[in-house]
Length: 431
Image (cartoon, rainbow, N blue to C red; front, top):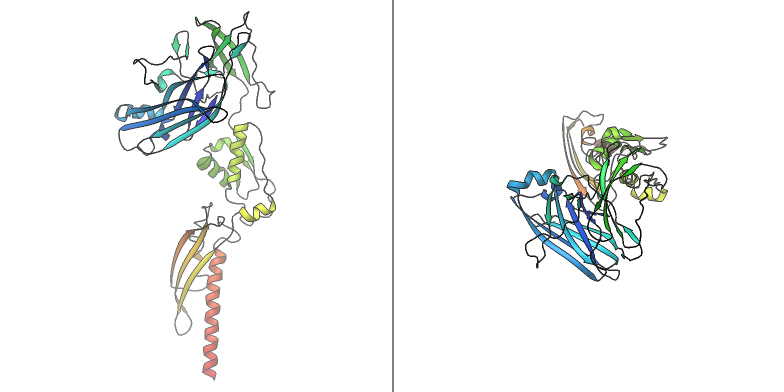
């Protein structure tokens, strides 16, 4: 019933309503969140291009609609930003299985979102009853800017709008949000072209197919005046819903950092709803401090599937993909007086960051490296210049010392070189 559009938080909802014995009227509502739509918009003239088309099982296009909607942001900016835009169009299709594709584009910024989802148009037979997917009514009509498609042959009036109950229109939610203890209404559309009055029996189950998550009740039945077509207003009272809390078990050296980074900057989960548990970690030496992508992926997947998700890296995978320790190319110069005392040190370093920045990657060759270049020696003047370089290797981060071994190795190499020079000079003087 729903599909995502990649302009952030945009959705498309679609179903089918019987039009004739051969065709179904398929309403499509494209829902676009305002923040993503307006990102990068610099003028008050907003032009939104909306395209939708369906293909059959062999890839042949069967119907489409397109529209360019213009908005005066001087009047509607706040409305769009804090609510969004819903566009209502329709398709006419014969019974069968299809693929619906939707594209939304901001003509000024070029930001584009696309979505694709399967669409099944049932065959409305004379002998059976058909129940369409539920249309949730948790969005008030005045929350969104709702636009309706006008075809080229339209006489200026809008197309039929089927989302009404008791004569009042409602806006279906492409992504209904349920809150524990708060009821939500939805509309069920049914076709019964056979004899007798169909009964309605419903139950609510969890992802495992067993757990009851609420109570469903019929509020009233709306007579539409169309033979065999009924609209049922139902109410769902959720119970025992998940609280939106997550628990991540990960072999991390610093679960507090993982909770902060993943919650605040990756998945946008409030920290009080995210628990990161570090069991017996074993050896790490720094490679298990930073935030790995798999930690976010399994947490996100568990929220989508409503069940635990587990992932374990194989040894060969860890060798190739875990963060590495250091990769420097350095030119260093050490100045001394005639007695061998240090006068100044100049260090020029190119530090490999890998293909992507890891958690502490920029900090290691700068703050943790340059500040330790004096070592145990008195050095009046030190200059260090570091250039971070992106390459095609795995990311580099804090591992076994994190910057300090590099600084120690550098200064000790210079000292050893100076000692060798002083020894050679003393031997020459003896000769």
